[in-house]
Image (tube, rainbow, N blue to C red; front, side, top):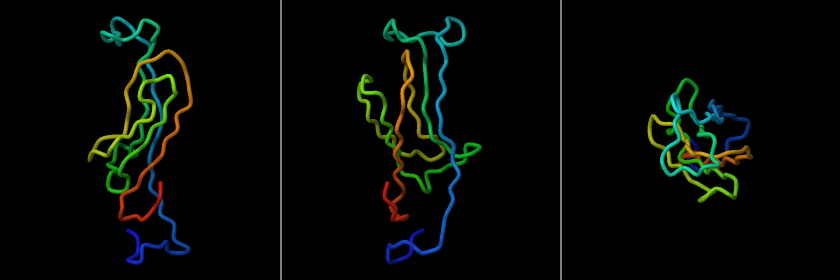
Length: 114
């Protein structure tokens, strides 16, 4: 928690461990069937996430996450609000690789900027 003045305390560091990453699975009739309405050229389902180590809840210090996906994806800038006990994540389908930018928004009590 930030001091009452809302300013940073010199010489103090706080560490909050978390995990971020992506997973991708090719569509397969038996283990990962393609959902109805998915375009023909989409070959995989994928997930991007930020979560606590060992799935520990991180919403007490992280309020929301902005995921910036490839511009060809509809609604390519997405905000995911924190839900207690759940990871910040997006599930999608697609066919290729691209960079994803993640911007973290901390709880107001931290007085930290994104």
